[in-house]
Length: 96
Image 1: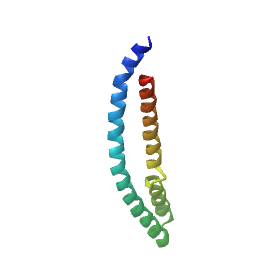
Image 2 (image 1 turned 180 degrees about the vertical axis):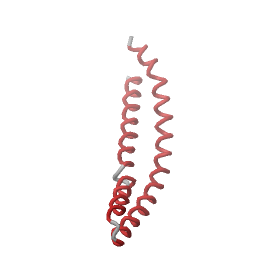
Image 3 (image 1 turned 135 degrees about the vertical axis):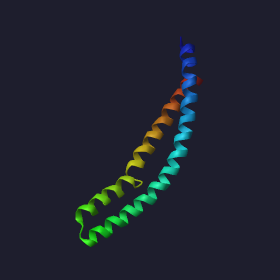
Image 4 (image 1 turned 90 degrees about the vertical axis):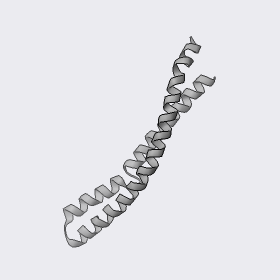
């Protein structure tokens, strides 16, 4: 019975390995673009706050936080790491 489960799990290991590699590649490029956008949004927020447009400054400040490395990209990195953990667990199951 255990060998049947290992045979069933093998295609999922291949699928997870390929999808993880693609996601890491896309994440690296997206993170680079989002860092640039975060800096621009932060500068726009500062300029708007200095100019007296408080509401717009706060909105751009929130956008700058969300696209910064500690916002949405951190959640995406956590999800990619969990996907890799699942892949490692399946590989361990198959090899033991």
